[in-house]
Image (cartoon, rainbow, N blue to C red; front, side, top):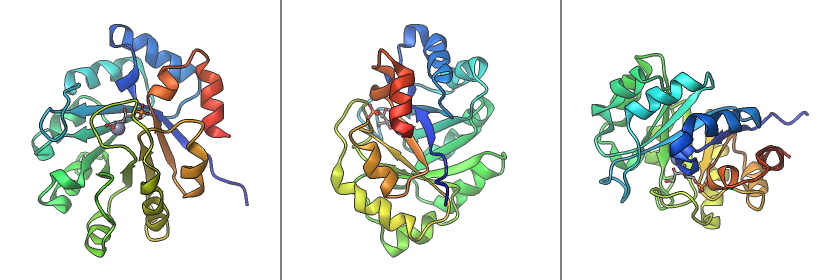
Length: 214
Ligand code: DX5
Ligand code: ZN
């Protein structure tokens, strides 16, 4: 059977924000599939990054799907702004949500795909599995959320495999993915690979993109 093509989503967190449009065109030309946008609030995670205004700007320079990863507290308060800014997929954190199903419906109401992300220490219990089952995408963090350029946490890999055997939607992996770790996550069954520093830190982006696809 032919293996399905993996989706590559460069995280712009590692781009040069002084010339973001140019950097996005670069990854686009190198053949990526989505653009991953890391939103941090300095509360849910110990870092502050970007908000809807930047998403709106990014929307102007690319027609690729915008995969917006909200690492923020009370995400429900900001869904509408991120939809209006042009998001195609909105992912909230399991650990930041009190009523996950309500949030999923809130996102889907706008015709946007709904994702949910699990931090490395969040276990795939029966309750968690039931709570995330109806989401379009589950994003597994393989670093503690907050910063680009961290090392891949190998102990999270069994969680990806366990999820694959029980979940039919898209599985995305985020954090520390490079040519050294991509084989492991593909084998575990991921559909989407988020990569920040590995792609934006490259002199030859096309080559690195090919190494991730291989
Ligand atoms: C971390 C972010 C990631 C990060 C990935 O909190 O969610 O998207 O930017 O960066 P690398 O690939 O450098 O680990
Ligand atoms: Zn991310």
